[in-house]
Length: 250
Image (cartoon, rainbow, N blue to C red; front, side, top):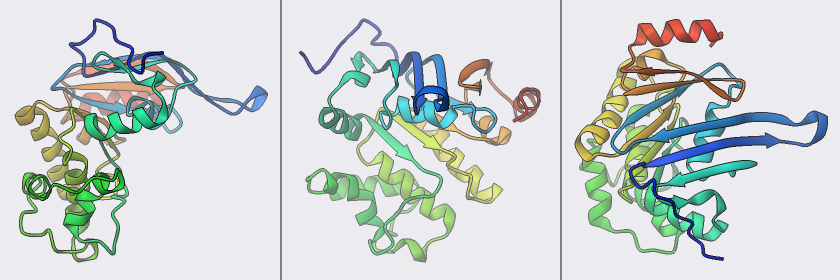
């Protein structure tokens, strides 16, 4: 069987088709996703929102290849990644997508440069210093490569995490509550970086957030409830998003 399964949907950056994800079995099973279909166009910024337990983080993890759907399919461009062997999926994930976590997930004993180059080192590759420095410059941390995370503010640490996600120059960047641990002013700086990656570099960005203000940086908002996409907003504003969320109890 060939590793890569292709279709003719090459104009999409990523998409999910009839995505289901269940945890557990029998009566105790939790249906986190119940038939979600989503298409992400290249060079767009999508925010995923919904009440706690709505399935938004599960959707993000499935789209990013960090979790496998129970059924349905996930595509990056013309590659069906949900059917790839784990080793091939890991290789493709390192080259095609980046992921930013709320908790930064930096190694405290490593320098900033070492943290940014860590994904490549874990893959058995020698970090490309020029790429590491370029990624740090893009997030406004040029000259900080020798610092350690403990010497940086929370916002600067999140910038390091973004640089780490960008060092492979991914086509799609996934972010799970990237401003959740930051104050509002610092959060706006981080959101500006994500927005600039879309506008200036043509990157596709998908962000889970609970904050209507953060969602206002996106081109589109997907609203989930009970494992389903129940609403969608184009050109969202914080007020419109907040009003729709209030209807869902989020």
